[in-house]
Length: 274
Image (cartoon, rainbow, N blue to C red; front, side):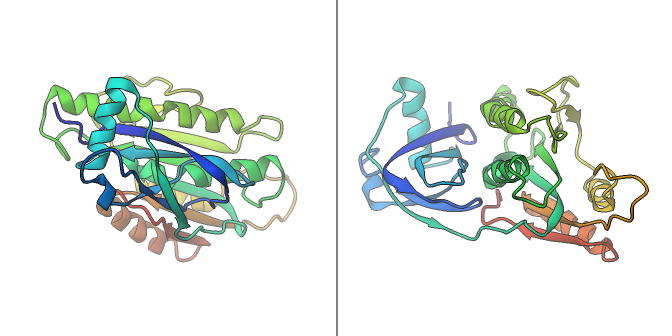
């Protein structure tokens, strides 16, 4: 049975602390994993985030061919550890200090490009060091037949992506403290039939595909941000942060362009799960 499309969590213990900004990635060299791995380096998004330097980096990876497939197979067998060499970090980190609302959208393993931003946003809200007052994370797991043939394996792959991410999402929700009102909303969409139940904590499951245009329109109005009554509080800007398949990105570009009379910006992360 193939290992392609299955989730793989990688934990890297560093020899010294490293500062990694939200949205950045590292190159990983694992020379002892296989015969040919010593000739290859691989870029992976860092899903862990801290305001300080990090001693341990966490990655959330889709196993494909080559080294990730080998790593997944060996992790399932004995949870192996390997010597690794890390270079970086690389890539841009989007500043969100000017935005009142962030709508983060990911499909499948695009969650890897979003998670570190969500951690930073929640930290900024809790410490009153960020202007952002609302974050809505919309995550779509693609339907059966779009990437794999119809089979029991397909269903297992999609469920594994969701279940492997459950601890990531629950950690986010746990860090979103209620003292000043929750700022994080998570909407989980899955196309094949699924019961409408809570995925983790405060994160409903929806059947079908998100209505991206309607979601962008609603968030851009600022209607879900609590405001002081009887005041002329100016509405802030909305950022649409995306790590998603090309078709979804096309729809979001159009949806943002339609909102030209509002303060809406689109930013595509360095990692896109095409």
